[in-house]
Each structure stands twice: as structure tokens, then as C-alpha cells.
Amino acid sequence: MTDSVTEREIVTFPEGLPGFETTRRFVLQKADGLEPFTLVRGLDDGAPAFVAIEPQRVDGDFRATIQPGDRLRLQARAGDALLWLALVTVQADGTVTVNLRAPIVVNPATMLGLQVVVADSPYALDHPLLAA
Image (cartoon, rainbow, N blue to C red; front, top):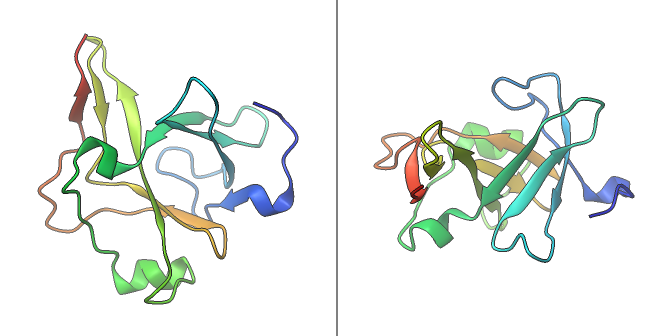
């Protein structure tokens, strides 16, 4: 992975991510050996990095609807294809989980992103991915 990032590769999260509200600029990186995961890497000094995966890779039936207000915040029109990513967490007991209830959504057309809470979601914040 390279530190050379162009402006058009930067995803801006205008509100940051919960717990990391001051970090607004991230890059999504795929790398050999990391697939099917994506690295969501903050670009500012001391910024966090997260591992994420497309929710459909975890649950082939994953379906979520973006709320109209969130669509506006992403500057997305009804037909725009959006990128959905679920953050991966390694729990204290070594279990690996993904947050399917509050995924990250990115509009590739505007490079705006946000973390959304799926209303009335059947999905968990800590859906098991791998066991220790």
C-alpha cells in the first residue's frame, strides 16, 4: 500500500465516524493478501484505520435501505450506486465480528461517506465473522 493518494481517491466523512469525529478524510485501499477486506485509512496524523468488508460477503441476503436524509448528506440520487462497507472488529476473546447494523456508505460519485444506522435492522452490531 502506498502513501501516495490523489484528491479524487479521498472519501470525505463530513461528520467523521462515531468516536473519531475529528478525522474526516479517509482512503479506501485494497491490497493483495487483504481481499476480500478493504482498509479504511484516515489520512491525518494519528488518524485511525479500520478493516471493512462488503456486507453481502458476510450475509448474501444483506439488504439495507438508506434514509432520504442520509441520501441527501451523500448527495446521492435515487439511481446512484453506493458502496456499503461493514467495519470489522476483533473482540477481546479473539472472535472477529462485523457491524452490519451501522455500515459505512460511500457515494463514489461525490466521494462523500457516512456511517448509517439501519432502522429496524435484523442485523447485529457484532455479527460473527470468524471464531478464535
